[in-house]
Length: 490
Ligand code: ADP
Ligand code: GLC
Image 1 (cartoon, helix red, strand yellow):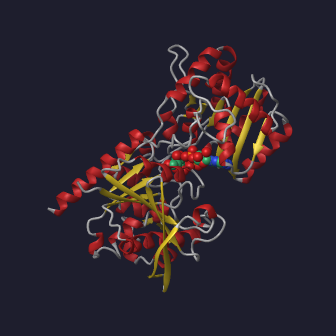
Image 2: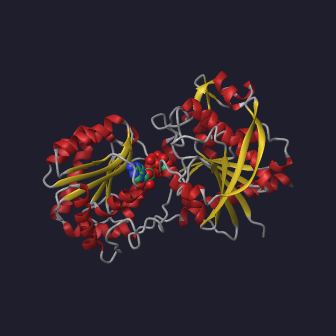
Image 3: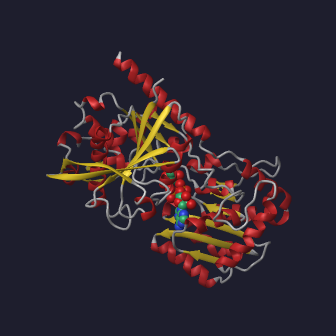
């Protein structure tokens, strides 16, 4: 039987470039499809900020020129096969240089309009004819639109189906319509209310929502939430209208990369059989590394995050001193982002020496050590499409304390002291004192019911957060689209 050919189009992907969970998903999910039935490849920009160890491994395939914005643009195509997955990288230093994949929105709109057009133009050159193009987030929202436009009459793209996956609805790629028309090369036909216009502006994410054959997002709860005004970021009406095409498929993590048993970034490897004592050894080593008081009985709370308001830092800011007034609590933070949150953690590190460690930078290795060595992991998000950090914590037996929203609600089972169930702690309302109460409750379990706590650590580690189940769900969606395609062809 012929394989179903799928192309992922995305703006970031591990191990090449990562600013958040999107990269983790794009870099891991393709590995978990059934290779006998699905040929899934990935296309992304060849940013100059991708580390040389990867850039150097990329093999030059070819280059060509295409018309975009009043001039001929160069597109180089590079290729790299990693873990059996083929990655294509599009090279154009005018658009893809700089020290970070993203810059200001004004430039990014043109950059990703170009990427979306270039990705499609390069497929006939590469000779990969996808059945389905699976687009991720606003940066690729124009792929289904261009397919409907420039590429419509092209037999190469005949009946290509599209999926648009929302990883974060907050970012939409919005600018005024005249500028958007100029930057995307799309005519005024597209900038009406039933297409790319939203609230008097042009909106690239909306292009994906309107033109894709299916819409998915990264958890069941978020798929429901985004149909409401509070979470809908202005798109809730459209998403309600599209609900027959919208579904939630929860993210997994790469359990080969996040594996306490052989993780080379952590000091002491462990399994579910010796996690209690080995996690304690890791804790003492982390305390030493971060300048925290070395105390195996301290209750160490970890935070690894982009420091933005999405992640609930307003709640933490509001009750930080109350949390620290709890006896023997320590907080280890790793993150970068908004200045006010960076400064808040720096302030507390200064005010509570040996009890707060503010690591305001990006470090993959330290993130693994925090996931492995802390007792609890705090993630009280305002909204959370899925969240991977809580899954990583669970995998390492560090119990998440989360707000019941989006994927956090779907992946963390709250502790029930009566039935002895649960894998973490959760609270409902976006309220700092509700969060404080649950932090206190977690600490109380840790201090006074250590057996129950330890049993929960084991349960957390035993959960299955691999991609196995979710990859099957994406496959089922691909099959459904292939069925549609076949019936249209007949
Ligand atoms: P989001 O994509 O909204 O940022 P996720 O929880 O889905 O949230 O994914 C965040 C990813 O980024 C995780 O892999 C997390 O470990 C990583 N991460 C966030 N901040 C840092 C940091 N400062 N250093 C290392 N890794 C980080
Ligand atoms: C986004 C979301 C996060 C999700 C990630 C990967 O960055 O904020 O919740 O886990 O995408 O889908």
